[in-house]
Image 1 (spheres, rainbow, N blue to C red):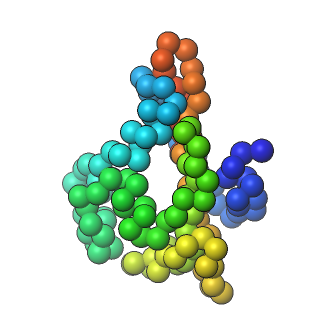
Image 2 (image 1 turned 90 degrees about the vertical axis):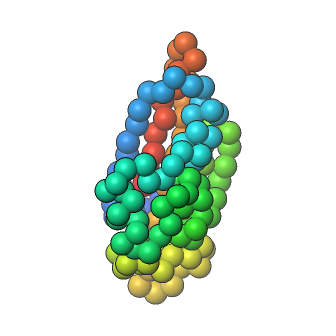
Length: 125
């Protein structure tokens, strides 16, 4: 069973994206979390509108808005938070600190090896 399914077995919304990258699985996951969270003008504007800093890595951004690591291996990281992400600031807090009226949000980032030093990097929420 996938870590995400163990942590959040029932959910109302689901989205998955994947890309093939020229890196091994461990390097791909590490690079994902180290990349600039707001590389484009539109993304920066949306983050600023929510009062968030725009000069952060993906890992710093997620941690800064309340996401905590729920499970980590070299090739898979699951983060989670609870709160009201539909509000401007989200009022996010640790996954286990869910309150009445909150939703739980989990994010899975993982990579699997392909041939010739490539891997499939996926995100799932």
